[in-house]
Length: 295
Image 1 (cartoon, helix red, strand yellow):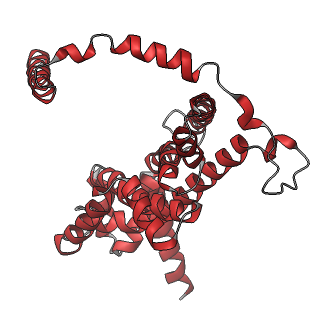
Image 2: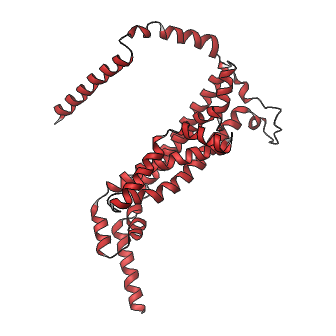
Image 3: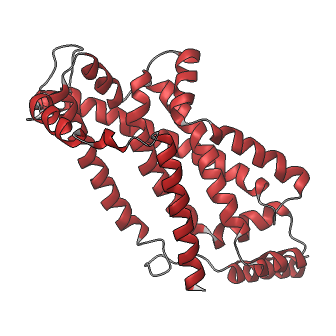
């Protein structure tokens, strides 16, 4: 079995090299001297980074008591985190409503297929294109960025969720249907609790993803640090661009470290245990029995 896997990987690598060679026109000489040019550009235009981005600005008027919070670096990164946070939460709400409708083991094809097509249509356009569309619709600024990232989060996170639901054990679903539970009750009391670890892990990952992409959509005027990166590149202030890139890198590393700690509390080995589907069904059965006795 392993030999077949390695053989398949080797064949795929072979065809990938053929494709790259075709795209490069067979001219691999383009790589010659390319690294040297990059080193020269880096030393002459980007190094050392210009940390003026953390100096307080005089306009617009900043009322913060800390001068650091009045800088372009802080304000742009803070706006980027705001865009990522809001779009992640709103996108998660939309995805968690649509994904159970798209899962084949929870709904019929008459409902699931149209919802899957909808999620695919949303996901087919990258976040940058959605940002351009919403900049045209609502104008420049972070609000268009929130709308763009929210819509893309719905499509991306919705796919992750309904695939997670489809991969779950069929035993809990059959037990719920045998008890006469509705689709809503099965989703709310069995499917989501059973997959809560995966859902929370996907939510944290999506926030990391949105932080990185929120820096990109700013290039088209959708707010965030990307807006200043685009302006500095137009003015050829590459040393300031490099300083912003370092700031983004540090923030992403911090978020990745925090998310790693957070995920440790929602995995199978963590301190927080997901509720068992069997215990949920037993509690529901006990409630029904008590209600019948009360009647």
